[in-house]
Picture (tube, rainbow, N blue to C red):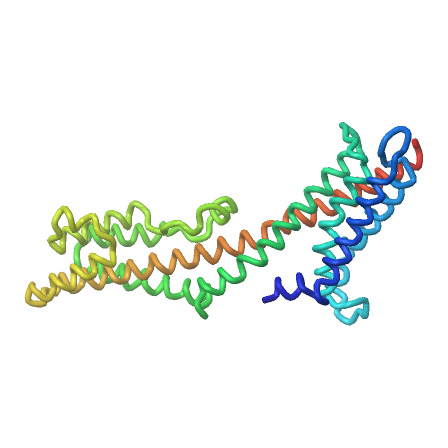
Length: 303
């Protein structure tokens, strides 16, 4: 898989490099014992600061490298692998650079932005390891466009079929078709898109169908699939009643439509959760670069 290939790129080359870098930084930090305590103003603090700045700039160049298709500066896969592991190492390097001295100032702001960038990046790695697989499994070689076309077709057939049964049922099915919830706003896409697509109107249709099928009180608590079986049995025992036949077909159509709506919503949700991190990672990176520049300028001017 893609996420495995870039994480294991070059026999874990960049994981080993990042681990070695962290080990050296930790060893130097443990050995170094300045008189006024560890801080960014010591020779080790400056060294770690320069190393951290170099890493941040290198990581930010990934976007440039991805758009230069003919570049000879390493493969994109290698850059992504380095981006992940050096980004994690940066958390250690930058923290040691601060000497664990934080306050309400520009320097701590730059550190906080860096942490947010790293956290959003970790989410991105996890998202790309999880959601592409879920999208593939949910689609089952189909497409969202094909599902939407089928939903529209089913709605038309269900409305026409309901009109052949009763006007009330026609109005109910028409209303449910007009108020299907697909996608929605960003909150719905992220949090609720995978939920059952049926609303109050579909519940009313189910109750109506159950009454038409002569279901008992116990039967009325069953799901749509069970009701289809009940409808099939009722039709066989009711000398092929045409109305029951239409009711059964309508229930099958609505059940299939609800399944498709759920699949579309799960697809929308997976894509939203896969992409949401970029809306934070990229702007936070830009803010980090600005804060880092201000941090460096202020250090040289006032320290």
